[in-house]
Amino acid sequence: MLAHALATHLGHYRDPAAREAAAGLLAPPVLAHAALLAELARLVPGATVDPAMAWLATTEPEAAGTLTAVLARATPPADHQG
Image (cartoon, rainbow, N blue to C red; front, side):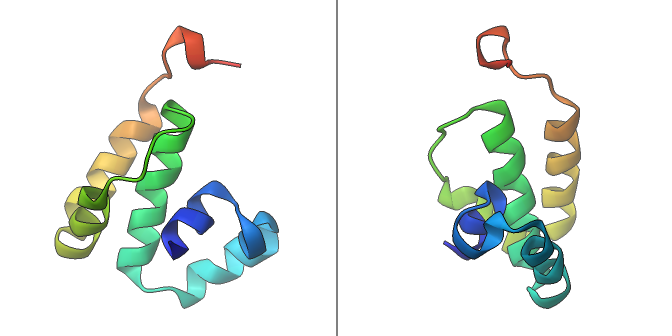
């Protein structure tokens, strides 16, 4: 839930300063999970949260970082672009 709120800028994390401060306080797996969720939300607005992302971020942080980088370079489908 925390990673989802951070990734989608909900609640306290709507404030950019709060998101920046969280980066220094939250555990690396939470930050990795949030990064994956943020890229998924960018590519597929309204996508559901997949527990596998939390597992990946916790057990394989390097792989989570690599997947996040790949997603960051991906372009959303034409019907999702603004």
